[in-house]
Length: 431
Image 1 (cartoon, rainbow, N blue to C red):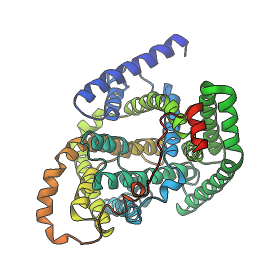
Image 2: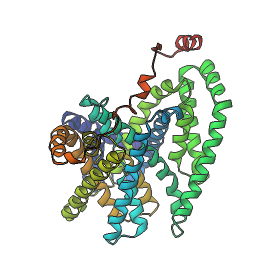
Image 3: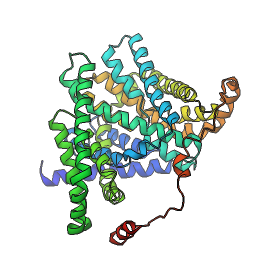
Image 4: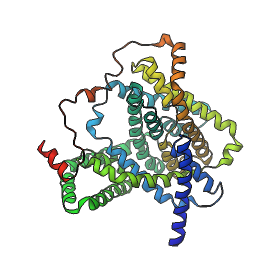
């Protein structure tokens, strides 16, 4: 591809994403949906402005790497231990119940067990980007149900990383027992993480200090990108996914005092490349499939939302949260997420799912995500109505917010340092 052709390609792609993003922001919808639809419009199943999505797939994969790296930055190991045991129990049960329930349903519909496992794992995930944005817009992210949804989403994101890790091994051993490649991948991932955590205790912090002091902000950012991409490449070479390597790299850096500086420098790159990824993914969607199978797509969409609501509600009740909290959480997480597209595309590339299932799940996922902002805004009215119908299910227990409020309750006589340049670092060391 000539340089001028590449520039025209990227310009058209970003222009389509920009225009659709502005429109959807105006409609108070997620920009992820805008990017997907702009890919549909300009792709081979739409206006054919870009006929080959493979031309920009590499840029999109870089976006996934940066997404997983920044996700890892948000998961310092000590943060996991501040999670209340009931939030951890509820989140784990939500994933387990949703996955098992979906697997059972797909098997009853005549699909194979392997396909059922793939679809069940996808159904267990919700949209972190959309849910958190709507919760922020509604100013309820610090409510009990808002914070519980965030914890559930964190647990789901960790589960998604594990799913991404095992896909290459599953593809290599597609005819073998499904449990064996999963255990092999998990063993490799744990060993790789142990080595990285050991390095993080010894060499990596010293290297960060040296680069920051000698190279300044510009070279520090370049070094961070090299570390992220290099780790992703290593994990790909040893048979794991590049996305897992990026996540582990972020996890290692998350305990560093340069965490927020790294995040601030990487977010713009992540947003641009992720935009390209979702537009490229949208090019794979075929509107003709929905036109040819509207009943089937709508039935799957409704089934996903009803099942996810029910299993999330049940898991939250089992974790002994109040009825209204369970209802709010069930409604808020009754959609598929952005990681669904990432994982599904990987499964499609590795020939683990058929083209028909790919189009069906991506189309249904897009519809569930589009309905999410409306559902969360209407949830107070729905919760009041449902709570009256299910009043007998209320389970008394200790204060639902007790687990979720623990981190803030431990702050006493603390100091907030605004800015973490050379002066901020010096003040932090003195304190």
